[in-house]
Amino acid sequence: MAGTWIWIVVAVVVIAIVVALALAANKKKKERNRARAGELREQAAAQANVLEQREAQTRETEAKAAAARAEAQRRQAEADRLEAEARERASTLEEHRAQHTEHLRKADELDPDVRHEAPRTDLADTETLPEQRAEEPGAHRA
Image (cartoon, rainbow, N blue to C red; front, side, top):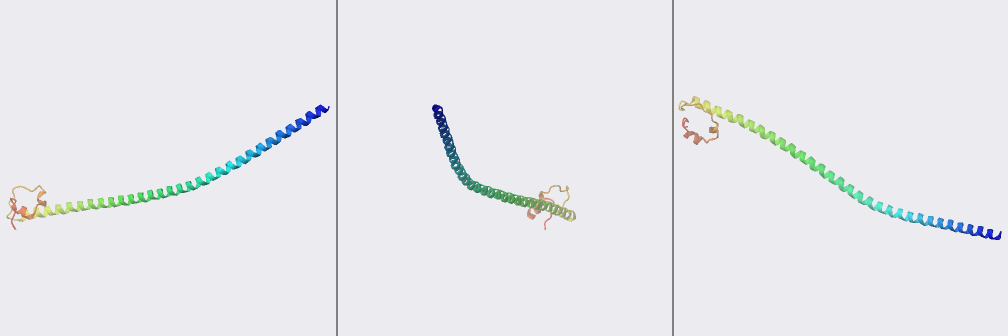
């Protein structure tokens, strides 16, 4: 029976050693995990700074894009306004040109010195100088 007690004591000692080793290994694993978690937190903090910088750059770029878009819209509005003004001026010019041509036609109609061979249909005369008109056949001299 003394041999049995020895084996029981040996088994208890072995179990105690195994439990102690398991607890020590678990403690070391927890310490490694704590250290690794600390490293990951440090990396995350460094990445947070980089992310904040990138967010700031993104907001700045978005603001520049919005400003450029607003400037483009302003320039487009100015271009539209100038085009409308040019169309209005062209229309007014055509009206004045038609009035000018009509005045010349009426003057030629009233002037007894102008020969009326054929009706004037070309508008090229409105762009000639008075000296050139004086040299044309059918024109009167002032």
